[in-house]
Length: 543
Image (tube, rainbow, N blue to C red; front, side, top):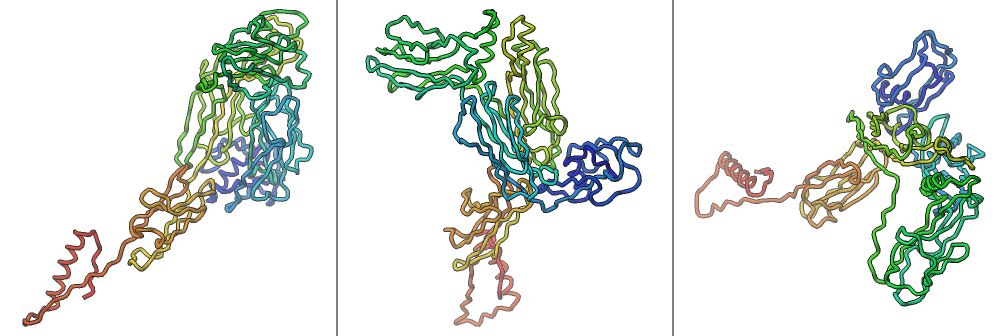
């Protein structure tokens, strides 16, 4: 037997495959504590599988016999050959983002079809500064508090469990509004010599504001000369008015904090801290684009997390790899790379990563359905320890700052079984044929089937697409039954032929011509040869 301690669904997948129950429609259930009865004999201490092995012997197997485990802890597996595929949608309230610092969001996890009555929910996030609270794990609800050090975007995951096994995972991305935020549109048109132009920012109501000072305005990265009569800045610095705009005023206007409130002033430390803080909502500058009315807007590029999507075909036995160059803006002693899988710290499995100098190579090794999900990696800086090493006085505790990130979404696809059928393969002009295109099994078990003729989809469906050829202008010809043409195409071809009748008349009036049966057959054979050459037809004689 196998000890149930540490035995997971990946190992259960291998067990089911070994028993001949290979199906990607289900996640097998792991039952512990001798659910189907205690076994006898030696006990395997630990089994670690990637999930793609053909049998248990290919997995990493621990000691056998002399293990700290009893038969009362034997593991059992339920191979749900006809399992249910659940889809999960995670929503937030309020819906619209970005959400201000200090706000509390309500998260809801909706599962279709309805999960089992014993379903429980676990919430995770790859953002180390996230704060998720779920008072009752049997209910699909949670709250998320947006703290001062929250990143610009944070992904939140809802894990749905039944009988201790994962049956589905869903996620949503929450965007955060900066401590400084624009009041009104960020793209402002003006007419030279026309009305005054006013740019205004707001400041979130948070205690973090007390750590920042010197709110200043910049124009095209140059500090605004507030002594100029045309520029009026309010006393609190939140509002900038251009009283008499001229054509040269077009450009990018930015409001940002230029100082920190510290007990011991150190300009070098202050500048370096602010540079780091500005990549987070807490100190992110607010930008406005001032453009001459009717002019073409400049192309402003914003930096976002790098995302890759990999689609794996099951059974190809292929491993995919890509490299990621790690930036080195800070001392490596205070930087680290952390990987997450669906919001949880990633330890082992089909995705392996190695670092060589500044390049990290990531390899996905023959992933299966248990490896499908979102992998996230972040280069983080231990800011508190780093600034201490630089001799900077720490007046506030700083978190782990993310310097760069990457997201890898792995989708597993297994070809469905495609069937194309026709009620008639040959029709006359007054007849029709009913065509059915169906898809079964495979993964994911959500299909888009269609009948395609001449490169045009003429009938669509989900699991089944049905077509009556009487609705097609030219009913005969080649039809393709296509499944999931937006992801991976699989198809079957049906050829509908036109049935025609050809009569041969021999005029023997006024003669004594008599054709023997053998002569008639030879004539028909010759006609069949002509028909095959001229119209690519099959000729059946009815003498």
